Length: 208
Image (spheres, one colour):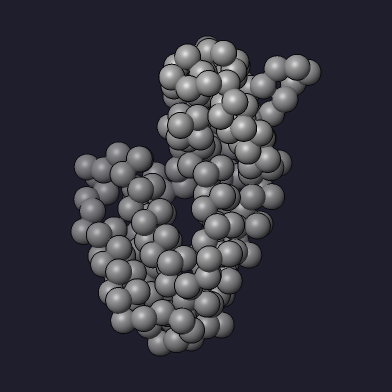
C-alpha cells in the first residue's frame, strides 16, 4: 500500500510517514505499518531523519549508480533470455515491441510511453526464466519509475528506441546471447546520458 503510494507520487519525496496516520488511513494496526516502513527503508524508498521517517528524496548521484546496476542486470537478462526463451516468450516480446511501434507518439502521454517501454523490458526479464534477476530488476525499476520525466520524450529518441528494441528482439530470436547483451547495455548507456542531460537542463532553468 505505502510502496504503491510512493511509486504513484501520492506520497512525494520528503513526505512525512507517521505510523499512526498511516495506520488510520489504511485501516490497519501500527505493526504492519512499522514492518512495511522497515522494508521500504531497506529498499531505499524511505529514510530515517532523526526519529522521523520520510519518503526519500531524489539524488542525482544515486540515479547514475542505479543506471550502472540496471545496465549490468539488463545485459544479464538479455543474454539469458536469448538462451532460455520459449516460443511463447518470444511471441510476447515481439507483441510488446509491436505495441510500441503501433503507438502514435504525438498522441501519447509520457506515462503511456514509459508504460509500453516498461512492458517490453519486463517481457525480456520474464524470458530469462531467472527468479533472481526478476527480483533484482523489479526492485531497481521502482526507483526509475519515481524519477520525474522520461528519457523517451522526444520523437528522435523514441524512433531510436524502436530501432534498438528491434535489434534486441532479433538477437534474442537468433539466440545470440553476446549480441543481445551488448545491445541491452548500449541501450541503457544512451538512456543514462539522456537522463544526465535532463538533469543539467533542469538545473539551468532560472527560478521564477
